Structure formats: structure tokens, C-alpha cells
Image 1 (cartoon, rainbow, N blue to C red):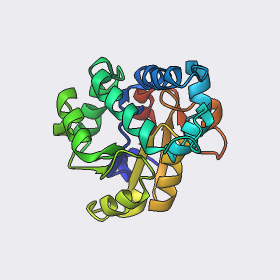
Image 2 (cartoon, rainbow, N blue to C red):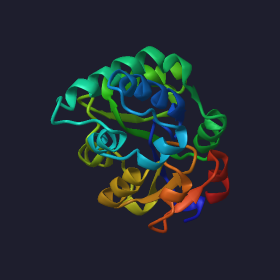
Image 3 (cartoon, rainbow, N blue to C red):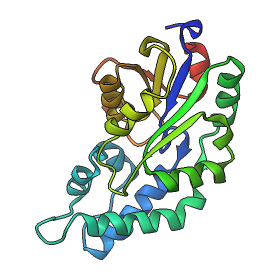
Length: 214
């Protein structure tokens, strides 16, 4: 797909534009420590993180026969928001958003982050102005982005062949497939390049490489 064929980009937020992997590992390890569960290395995190996140928690060692998933899930969200100020945009985000805007390509955000928190995070990061529509989920449990993605796609006035989704996980790839749009994955987020490289999707090492893709 050449740039002339792309009229809209649907961006994922966490891990794709926002570099929040380190704080996610730190917050999760605090929860694991309280439960006497072995902490995660960053490498292990990139290996086991998945959607729905309940499966990721189980992979990390949580036993939901002893407590409900909602307990650590809400504890994590609380810790995450307390540490969110330490997460910065990936280095090339502003540049690529400006570049995309200069090409007349409409930009959207689709995220598994709770919607109000997503809006605040985008505003705090100074990039809210680049996006025509922003869709987050209505709870903190990050089950799937498909439903809100289907809502978002209705707001985009272009054919699906003219829309591309940019994310950092296999879930983003699955969502793009459900939406009927092409997907590009950036290997700097919540899953390793090795994990991403299973279904033949386009995988880029850096956000800036999108310029060549367009």
C-alpha cells in the first residue's frame, strides 16, 4: 500500500505511541511481590503479555481461585495512573504525527485504555490535537478493542482499503482483521518482535519507518 492510497490511520496508544512498558512491568511487580510471586523481567513481560489481560495475569502467576481478577486489575490501574507521569512518548511520535498530518491523512486513536483516562493521557502528552476521533473502552479491564473499533470505523469516511491500523501487539493485528483494515506492527511496545512475527503482518522496528511505508 502506497501513501497515496492511505487516507486514515488508526493508532493504538499504549506501547505504540506511549512508551509505558517499563512502568507496566514495575506496577505488575509490585502486585506480584505482595503475593510472593516471582517478579517479571522486561523480557518475560514481552513474552507473556496478551489480551484479554486476564490471561496475562494468569501467565504472570495470579491464581484466580484465590481472588477475583478484578482485585489485582483495579490495583494495577491505580498504580499505573500514579506512575503514568513517568511514561513518555516514543521518540519519533511528534515527528510522525506531524508528517502524517502534512500528507492530509486523518488520524484516529483506538485504545484498550478507559476512555476518560485516555483523553486525559493524550491531553497531558500534548498530542490530542492530532486526532479526529478517539475511542477507549468503558471499563478498566481491557478485554478487547473489537467492539469499540467497530464503532470507530463507522466514523471514518473512507473505504476500508484506505485505512491502516498501527499497533504493537498481536491483539492489534486481530482487531485490524476484524475491522477489515490492514495492520502495521511496531516492535517497540508490549510484545517482542519474535512474538509479532508469526502471521506475516508488516513489522517495523521504529515509528519513523512508517514514512517509508507510506
